[in-house]
Image (cartoon, rainbow, N blue to C red; front, side):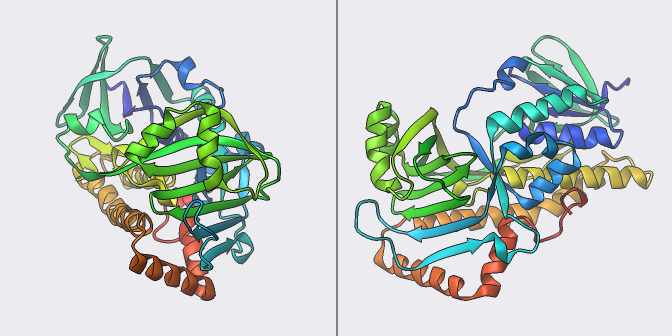
Length: 405
């Protein structure tokens, strides 16, 4: 069988693009198939979407040549403040967490980056990278795994041959479904309302997380006097809020946001995302591997979704290249199993942590409120525990792939 590529990536989003660049750097030929047209994917319109890039993710982006393209348009997260309180119900709990980047020798815990900055940078780098072929505006309608490779059939009728298919095509991954990989998960009856706001006063690089009974409200600093909002509400309430016009939406956001940054106004569009836990039961199948949301989708309470996906990318690249360096078939089942073993525990731990955090903090039960407030007070008073949590949030713990070192 004549191969069109060593690796075929289904899904050219952030994780798929980063994987393509990392593999191409190592002399591995890659084809990326994405359903969206190229101009749609590269649209530079401000839409409020942004990502909290942990320090380990920044290291990966630097290693694949992306960080220098975007660093001047990112915002370092210098502090994170976590508080427990109810909207419009008096002062916040006196028990709060305060993470200061000065406690980490390595620097800021992470950087905020807008989607309109990161996505076009990755696409431009793929266009320039030798060894990467991008196919846009086409979808996979069939795939078949054989002893020596895999075959994909596109809606256009084109047939592609490759040694390994990597599914980076989201939580409803067609790659996973066609490979017979099942998923485990549940809905939270919560919806995230996502937007960006401009404000009068500077944020000083401080991220805020307010825990309220319906769900958390995250206020995340962007360049300038702008912040990204990720506001989780019960599904029915969120639907009603999403249907409001901009001014009425601001009227329900302001009491929850507060006035510590002065007057606020909407910037760009608003989006809603139903919150679910969805984890693939297996990360690999014959001639198939999954990364990013195709492998795991977790509650955004910790802001670790993209970071976990980039850790998948870094681990898969290392497993494949190490195997090739030893003269092995880098797409053999035993090699892919190494990737699964490496990532399985980290994914399970993240899913469990975000699930428990969501349930613990999205409750107005007085006993649970007392337990979580005492817990935050203890962590704030214990510097070693606080620093350990900061390092974990920065992605500096565990068995790090080389691209994140």
